[in-house]
Amino acid sequence: MKSTDLRVEGMSCASCVRHVNAALARVAGVAEVLVDLAAGRVRVSGDTDDQALTAALQEAGYQAKVETSAPITESVKTRGCGGSSCGCH
Image 1 (cartoon, rainbow, N blue to C red):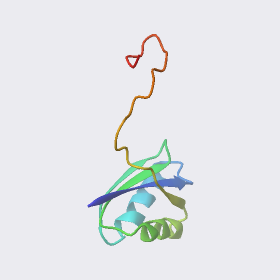
Image 2 (spheres, rainbow, N blue to C red; image 1 turned 30 degrees about the vertical axis):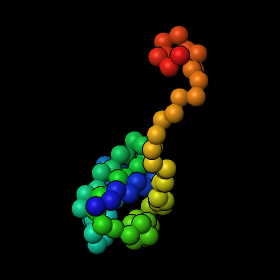
Image 3 (spheres, rainbow, N blue to C red; image 1 turned 180 degrees about the vertical axis):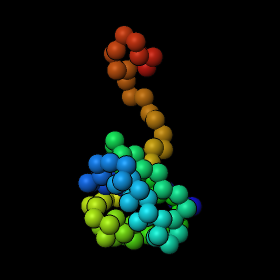
């Protein structure tokens, strides 16, 4: 099962959260929908197609795009940051 993070524009109230939840719950393969109204973000878990998610939201009246971020694989210290409270130097 994968997770997809979406940036959703136009959500402004609890009713919007219900509409977004309902729209995404109808998409095949969706197992869970978590909406963060304040941040304008949604995390969808399940075996889903990203285009189907954004299309469902668009049909419900919301603009959405998939947020992508590279996975963090390794943290490499190249030099200290110099801050007095930092433990990296």
